[in-house]
Length: 189
Image 1 (cartoon, rainbow, N blue to C red):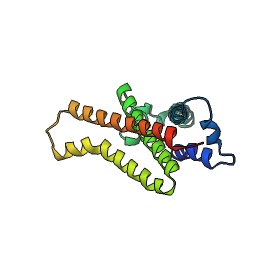
Image 2 (spheres, rainbow, N blue to C red):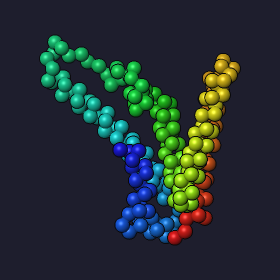
Image 3 (tube, rainbow, N blue to C red):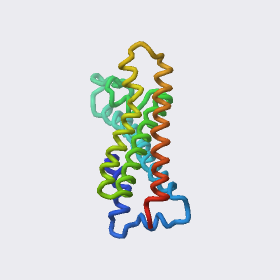
Image 4 (cartoon, helix red, strand yellow):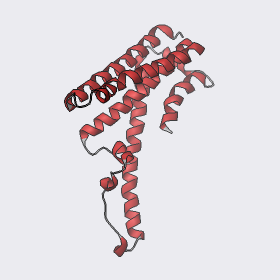
């Protein structure tokens, strides 16, 4: 649902009944603030959903423990079933993993937002520009990973991490720069 909302948060303003985006763009502030506000909204929704799920898991555990007889109960932590990859992505076990996983999500959402702005700026041919931009961003992001797979046992883990970090910063910086440029010069109100 949140992936649908990533698109909905922009398109409802443009294609809604009153085209609310024009009123947003006429506010006496930088237009990039709208971009960051929408990006922050998505991240807060994700973090709120994850926090709610953790609370619900704890409540469900209590309900299950009350329903199942004591002889059949087994106490387990939230991370006991962390062998599933989905658990590890949703609920990282360390603060560093938390920052990395959700920064990757932020990067992905920023690229999608910029692709939406490209599409809205250039009309029908903007769809192709947006797809090209998305594929180019993915290519830049995965370039160090492909490089590591070609040259196995050549790079140290810290070098691999730094390469991925630098390419992530390049992709995020370019997404924000392109979005700022489009919001300032291409989208007219």
